[in-house]
Length: 237
Image (cartoon, rainbow, N blue to C red):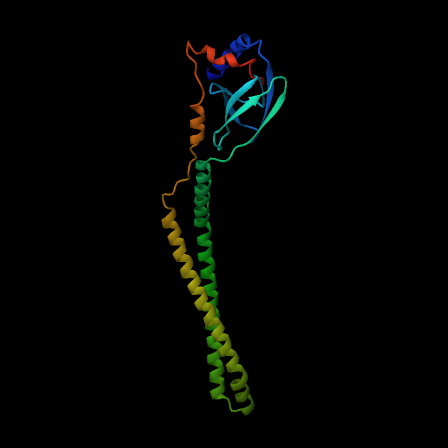
């Protein structure tokens, strides 16, 4: 209904201003696929080129997720001019993107933290098994050292076998401690993540600039026809 009203008033403007000289204005707007504008505080339009009477004209330009930009343009008769505009993202949209990123990160954390716990448990289990195996080997070497009567065997066990098993036992113990710490830290982080994300809802974007833009469109009453007298022809799509 609003677009139809604007169109009818633009036709009335053609009749009232047919004798006026006009110029063409091309709108080069970023983003270029879905912007809209309110012309002279009255007509909401969505096209890339307009032909207007000579003089100063006001544009309020908006696109989804962008701010409303107000600007004045002087149209020169019998000439084609360009209005180049880059619409910045709105504050609400920037906040929404940050909140959405945080929400998505939290949701991903709920997936991969159990994986970390599983890796920690596997690491700890393997390290524990290695620690027991090396400990058994050391016990056997010590027993062989005490039971052997061969001086050469005794010396080799003392100088080589037992030191090697002790070194392997230290490495296995270090791996076991590291795996246990990693597992406990992963469990703690998983619990923290679950608590922090429980009840978390996906953020929603409220385009307040759109609401502001919608409120700019002029809806004429019975006595408002004279406002359209400055236009030469209807907006061309």
